[in-house]
Image (cartoon, rainbow, N blue to C red; front, side, top):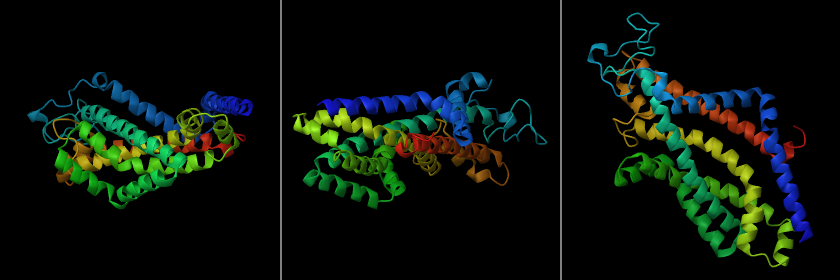
Length: 302
C-alpha cells in the first residue's frame, strides 16, 4: 500500500510539473506557439463574432451581389472579403461559421473520446472474452469507410448539428479505443497495479485511480488532433449536402455554396477554405507540440 501511494504521489507531481511548465515550454517551441496563436485566435473570433463585424451573417443585400474583396477592382471597403451570390458579407459569415465548425469538432471528440476511452480501458484491463468482443466491434467499424458510413447514417437520421456530432463521434471512437487499450495493457503489468490488486482494491477503483490518470496525456494529444479531423469531416459532409443545412452557417456550407462559382466568384469558396486550412494547421501544430511535451521520454529533457 505504501508503494501504491508513493507511485500515486510521484505520478501526480510529474503531471503537475509538466502542466505548470506548459507556458514556458510553449514559448520555446516556435511551431507550438504558432499553433497556440492560431487556435486562440479562432476561439476568440468564434466567441466575439457578432461584435467584430457590423454585418449580419444572414443579411441579404441584392444590390451587392457577388462583390469582390475590397482590394480588387469593383470591391468595397464595406465588405472586406466581398459578398456571396445573395449579397451576404463573407467576413461576417466566416466569423459566425467558426462557431458551429468548432462546436462540431470539439463535441464530436467528446463523444468519440468517451466511448473509446471507456471501451479501451475495459478491454485492456479485463481482457478475455470482453476484449475479444470489443476488438471485433472496433474491427467492424474500422473496416467501413468513415465518410461512407457517416453519409448513410445522416441519410437515415436526417441532418442537424447534434446528429452530425453524434455521427462523427461514433465513426471515430475506434482510434481512441485501440490507443487506450494498448496503454492499459502496458500499465496493468506495472508493480503498483499488482500491489493494488494484492491489497484487495476493486477493479473499478484501480481503473479510476491508477489507469485513467496514466492514459490522460495520450488522450489529450489524440483529442487535440482529432478536433482537426472532425472539423474536416464536418466540412466534407456539409460540402456534400449531408451535414449542416442552410440557413445555418459553417465553413463547409460556405464551401458548398461557392463551388459552382469558382471561375467567376472565386472568393466565395476560397476564403472558407483558407479558414479551414489555417484552423486545422493550428490544431495540428498544437497537438504535435503537446505530443512531444507529454511524452514521458521527453519530460526529462525539456
